[in-house]
Length: 313
Image (cartoon, rainbow, N blue to C red; front, side, top):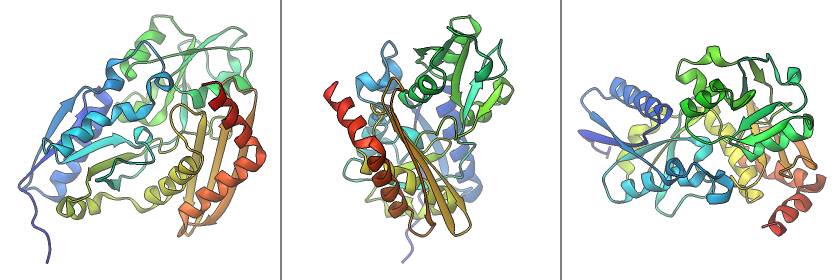
């Protein structure tokens, strides 16, 4: 028997402009598929949004952006939650499931500056802002002459800090800028060979309770096959290495037909040591490719890097 289509859906969403754009995008997709279903958005402020004076790595990682939304799902105040996939921990709390990954936007990092055209043009001592240990470690390795500083806040806040002259340049995700119509702020795209993107960067994930078979069926048409394959590989790398926002870890997968390639790094926060690797395999076995990449990274020094990070507390 087919499950009945609900007459009303509530989407739990962070209240930043980008998060609300993402939820509105999902609402529009659902409205096109199911015009008789009323879709509402429940805006919420998460702990990750409230604490802005310290880095995410020091307060528990990006999972802080999803906990309140999951509570709304558990309590029945919302039916689904829309997340940036890179914010979703690789191990979900019991009773929850990622029902769909939407087609990925550009996963690469963006160089944004009002004075300089690209990273290579920055002079010694130039101040570069980033919210990510992943980006910071890769920048420190390739550009040790730059002054890399923490940059918190939503997208508009970060751009405002740049425009006030607090930074010479900042590094952001291309996807968020494009989604908000700010692609013109991108001075240069940073290729994965220079800065490997975060696990899940550029993709949207829809989460619901695992016992909501009706919602899982309802969301199935939104799922994008190649994005799901790529993210399965990337998240498998992170899971195998114990990845979180506290670790400078990155993985990026590309799908081409029935083949898959996955590139990854594990780095020390100061960029002094970086393990790099890339593997290929069938797109039908993305988790296996992710686990192979994790093993290859360990063989190239990731185990020692991770141990040193753990010892440093």
